[in-house]
Image (cartoon, rainbow, N blue to C red; front, side, top):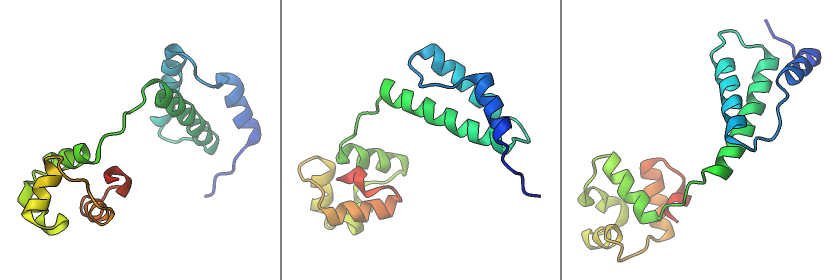
Length: 132
């Protein structure tokens, strides 16, 4: 059974909750509470799905502006991934090259080449931009 989207039902949701660009913590908390309520409904309607998507976009925009995540250095990212995966320097020799190259990269004495960044991204299945 295909559910159809009802513009009237969606308009009623918009009227009931009156979503807008979030500018304060209180507004953000209210939006989060509404989104969590919608997320936990067992049988959401297409209109509720669309409204939830809108709320999530508004919440994400506010939180990106209020709590920006500083970009980590490629070295910090590598060290973090090594720790998370219980890897030692010697585990990266086949990816980065020689033992000396791995040591220099890990110790911050050498930057990664684009090819090395791509190899690391493939190995850890992450975006290559994390290493550039």
